[in-house]
Length: 329
Image (tube, rainbow, N blue to C red):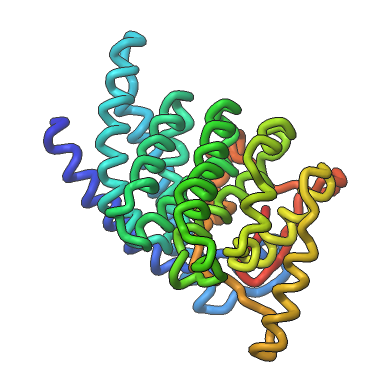
């Protein structure tokens, strides 16, 4: 049965991805808003999407039940072995099915739920991704997709240990400084998302992780990351970030007095405005945020207890910070 299970799981997840792609995030978001405004009447198209969404939601819950059944055992050792076997199969499928198409909105929460079952799983999954991120024979698009998954997962998964957060932050910092900035001759260092796309994805991953988990990381850890060397590099990584990430990162650096970098953004936007007549570059490196808030109601409820929602520091109610690409929720 285990021999047959892996190809069956792969086929199931391929079909999940196809269903997922017929439920784009903007449609799910509109349905979510409509549900909050109960008086609003839905159009026929919206009712069709609502039916498809609810069906997929039930299917996701059934898959969660499958995971629970697959790892169940009468003894602790048996349960551990079942978990490890399922994790190996699922990670292999992740690399084959999900990574090549980083535009799904919900399927990835199967992995979020699986990884929540045992603390060591998160560390193993992060190690698996980091190994491939550091592998220069991997394609640019694949490495950027891996960085997107890595940082989005760490930002949102409350069950990840603080030691794993700090370790990944240090590795991302080292990759930025040693494997990119210091390996590029100074005379060749200039802002170019086309030439240095992986570097910018790496830097944005680090900034995004700090935004969401700076309290868990702690100022001492952040201070050890060499943030100033990264931010003030001639490669200008802040300019390649989604604007909302760059701005929030600068805000946090100022609040913690670890760096002062708002002026870098201002200078770049002024130059961009003069050069193109617009200072809006929405998502220069086509970065992806796979673990933004889940918009399937029952699936979201299932993971809610260990999902890290975005909450403003002023203790206000959780709210959307509505930018063109990124919504912190």
